[in-house]
Each structure stands twice: as structure tokens, then as C-alpha cells.
Amino acid sequence: MSKQKFPIDETNTDAVKIYLKQRFAQLSWWPAEQPAKAKEEFDSLNNSPEALAAWCEKWLDAGQWRQLENAIKHG
Image 1: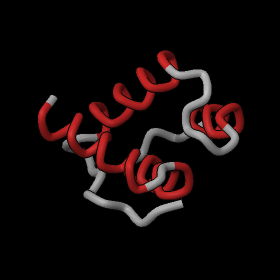
Image 2: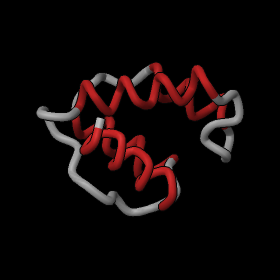
Image 3: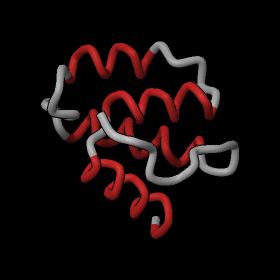
């Protein structure tokens, strides 16, 4: 979908996962493209920062990246 907007690494992996889990719980249609498949792939991640970053690059659009970045930086 979109190029990575900020680095996902060991320092923020847990916060990114928490944010994404909250989005799935709050919005059944999230992300906009194939949300059920996106959630299935998210649930099967091996929890490495690289895998999480790859998932985000695949599924998040530019606006969702900004929201994620803001949540991590200011949350």
C-alpha cells in the first residue's frame, strides 16, 4: 500500500502491536482493503519488528501510517 513512514524496531514494536490490535477491535472494516485477510495475517506474524513493518507496508495507507506514527510518538 504505502512506503514505511517511520521505523518500526525493538523499541516500539510492542506499542505498534497494541495500537494495531486496538484498531482491529474498534473498527471492523479496518484497514479498508480486505480487513479480514489483514487481521488474519497480523495474527500470524512472528512478532519481529521486520515482520510487523512488512505487514504495515502491505496494509496501511499513508493516512493510517500517520495515525500510527502519531499514536506511537504521542501516546
